[in-house]
Image (tube, rainbow, N blue to C red; front, side):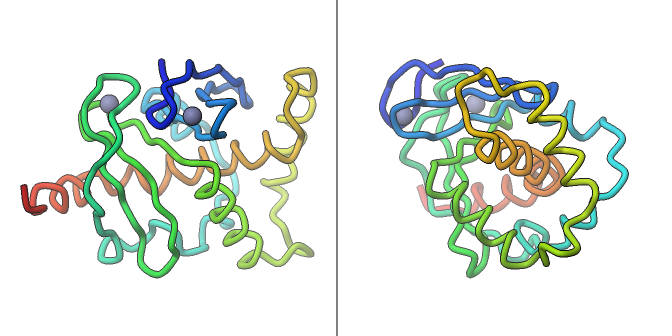
Length: 176
Ligand SMILES: [Zn+2]
Ligand SMILES: [Zn+2]
């Protein structure tokens, strides 16, 4: 697959037991629907960290139209913005994959870290870090980067994917 922004071949990165495709030029990441559904099927003990607002309220979703093509099937990627969070995700309504630019992922993590008190960071996130660190130190990516990708995958799988029916409606109502 090619980066929708720069056209460079995407590199596979294994995070936990899932795979994402990353552009090493612009740092954007493609999240495949199949990988995301694997996450949802996992037994997640503690998802309380998801209480932070991003993508939870369907009424806050809006679409900013399309200007990138899906790396999987070439269809249009629709920009989805969430309320005042300023976070943009690009979503394909054909294959249900999600493209996130590097800066958007940084915003998500910053947002999350502001909302979650570090003293009470759920055990869940620590487990996730252990899992990621133990397996993938040799991959040439920092621990923090892999942890952040894992967090964002969980968030997309539980939040954004659940909003596809709404996103489809929003996109259908866009002017041609
Ligand atoms: Zn790129
Ligand atoms: Zn697609």
